[in-house]
Image (cartoon, rainbow, N blue to C red; front, side):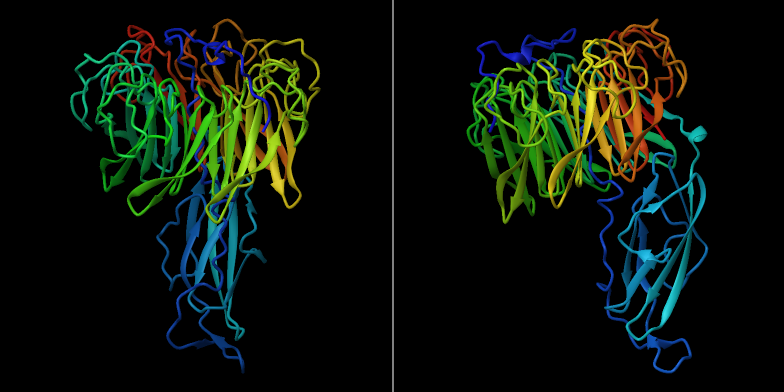
Length: 600
């Protein structure tokens, strides 16, 4: 473990933004959810149900049942729904942000094989803009075959557009709706940690503002292209100043919400939530959805949680695994769910402030950001004992085997410099890791430019790493297409399969359009988001994204999330007083109320 910043000066207070309490950091939010196209590439060939009887194609010795029991795509929905007796005529439409997909198929006859366009079932299929044909062939052990056809339309770049402008149902000045954001399929969760309701119930009491900065989370769902509010979520032990919603993670029907300034002294799950004797110890709340109804499943505390830890400053969720950061004390906790019960599985104490500032989990791999780490090492597994580069930052990788966790790699930037704060933001999807360093100083633009030019302070950068049988290696050094000093590109990052989204909330363009006007710097700190795709190891910028109501100081891009071709973006200092979706975005009478935007 590298030496972290053990200075008595708490670096968590270094990057104070606007109305933050003195010890409240800007949590990037936008936890990256991790159901990308590669993670969906699970080969189920030969794992089907036993068919009754057999069929023959008329040739001697050629027999078996070559039908599929089920068929699905990693992105997009089959139209019509899959029918084992229907082999042709399926279609699906995917976003421009989906350059590949994979097919999941279960064969009726065990041992039958499946190919897609004459290739392996698990291989990603590259999609061009427009029409793509998937020829799916099932072959039994006896040689019988059946062919299925799916036509996939990948939308063009020109169709990528803003789909929704979203506001809280109880908009108030200073709530900072959009501070955190999480997206999974057709569900979007938005955090507003400075919301003031004293409610302790879901979908109730949102107009009572007697608990300043208690915090709330809003869940929206999409039907077709139309979004609506499904739930207004509060902690069941709401208190002023808890900042519930500072961090959020969403996976299927499970939502995790961090409240890093909650003050219970409990060190157990589901115990002691009304005790406020440990100021700013922090807590995490887990909610589950059944149908359209959300309920709280767990109140989560660390086994050695103590005052000032800020447990819940960062959260990440994958299936039944929850990772929680407590960066004020340099602690990270891993919890697992068995049935409906959550248990602490692992705990790591780095002994230094900032470890756990960002966290990300994908399967049995966890990434932990420590942006105030001081080593001057570069690359993978360098000298962690050199402390000559203050706040250069590092990322620590851990892997799980048989329920036990061990350190897998110590990752640094390829151009480590003091103050870059590499690890400020993280996203992990399968074997791909994205790391934000928003205070990196290079003037480079685009992919893999000149890294050692430090003439553009706090321009920011993102580093993409991949893992193979030889371990982790850096794949790309990513910069904005319009790099400028102070933009803080990499303040937030999100990954989904081949798609990377990067927020630069202090970018200054006045543009209100996609892929236009990025060299206009007349609107300070409006913010922008950049979308990239990976084409066989080569990353390319696809989109430069701005809000439809761009205004100075909105900080659009403070949080980002991407999933299955949909991009969600938070602008926590946006000022509209609207309480509706797609309405009233030009009214600026509610300072820092915040907004969220969805693009597809």
